[in-house]
Amino acid sequence: MPKTKISVTVEGSVLRQVDRMARGASRSKVVGDALAGWLRNRRRERLEREIELYYLSLGAAERVEDAGWAELSGSLVGETWR
Image (cartoon, rainbow, N blue to C red; front, side):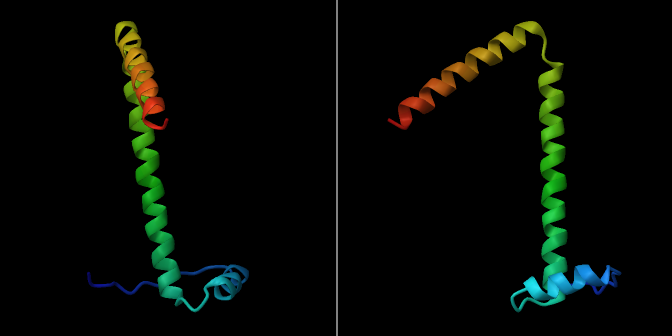
């Protein structure tokens, strides 16, 4: 995938710490890795919010059914690890 050049401004103390801890990685790699990690975290947070909203939307009967499935799957996992 082609790369795009950007310009960023950071505090000097942060940059000095990055340079010390980069272990030979370029600043571009460090920034690229940081941005990729940031994106992963945002996707994970969005998924967690969607899951939470789904479970909050369940009615009483659906919650009972879900609890039954959770109990069954939990017991099956326990048997798998014996």
